[in-house]
Image 1 (cartoon, rainbow, N blue to C red):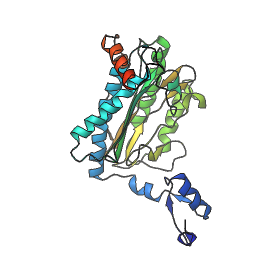
Image 2 (tube, rainbow, N blue to C red; image 1 turned 90 degrees about the vertical axis):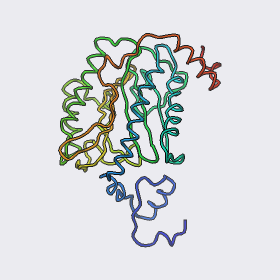
Image 3 (tube, one colour; image 1 turned 60 degrees about the vertical axis):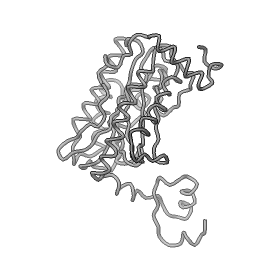
Image 4 (cartoon, helix red, strand yellow; image 1 turned 180 degrees about the vertical axis):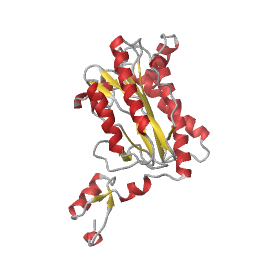
Length: 304
């Protein structure tokens, strides 16, 4: 990079690719959230785009859970990624191939206790809490929906932990309105989970939420230490989770719009535990499993 371009004062976005950001940082200046601050409050047009993306993540979550079954592999739950992308291509008249991206899959227990891990195709869905995770960017605008689910009936203890996670969500939702400090929401959730015995960093691992827009993770940050205050037309996630190593993770995430006097949840996938227990395995499940593995040439890695 030409050194003359770096003379004088300048700002750059903290989302700049690492190699470019390193050069800019070495020029004795610092990353700036200037663009992120401008983008936090969305226009009505941008909200419409994110609402559209949210409808697709809802559909995707249902498809991931439909593909999941007790004993099935993660490979089958990745299949809805292609199905969802084809649905977007068919239904979005101005579909932009360069600005549209879909991730849809199940994070199986106990790996679901690691929210930023990547499951292997041959990982199996057994007992414990799995997490269906769907993230979309439709023509550049993002949304997400995630649901903890079970392939067999949850135990009494699993129901209790799920109920605690649900209560943490309710605490967060009750606080959502313009003027509320983002860090206060996360702090209130932390106080509750601490009292319930889930305050240890090993069971939290994750802030209560984050913003959406041109990216799936951007300000405002719903986290202790965040300087942001909620305002009308911000888009945020609400996703307090409970994570236990060797057991699994409990997290329901929604895309939420700040309104003038509260909020509107843009994602509507089921949240009650009984709606998140997969029904009995049918002939369709192993047949779909065989086709998926054959299409991906996985039959040598995953026993049919």
